Image (tube, rainbow over all chains, first blue to last red; front, side, top):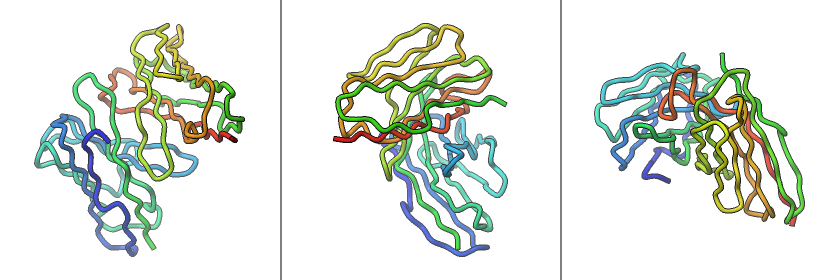
Length: 111
Length: 114
């Protein structure tokens, strides 16, 4: 899995609570991404990072924030989770000129 | 914005048959990527294509970068049960490269009957 670890792998939480998902890589790749995958929508980019402390929004960034204080870690935070954010979340990494490689995902349920 | 249309949406085939699927866009892509996703796992890169007309193989898989740069094709020969999964095409948004923002197709669900 290209040295990518996502945690937790599964989480159930309640509406209105904050949630943080972690992506950890051991490949020293510069670029990191967060996607969500939902039936009928495929994979959609939430946020991405092109270096430490350098991040940008994807196509579905509302309600999400990210942080990258170290090369190896990229955090995705839902400040106040809503049921519409129930999804499977994937982290991906890539290096300059290379394709993206994905982690095994976090299944998040918000009740 | 850029959209990728994959077809067919699903396929049910017998073991040993060949499979063809494609991905089309109304916009030009500079890179085409094909991924496979098994249940409960993340997408795994199968083939990357970087030049119009390029034909690349990976075992029983062959993918082509369309001459118009608006489409790509993936073929699987002599399918086996472990080919079951969802196949995605993807490409970087306009002006980007494969390390930029990717657009994904909706996926083709492949079922192989023994």
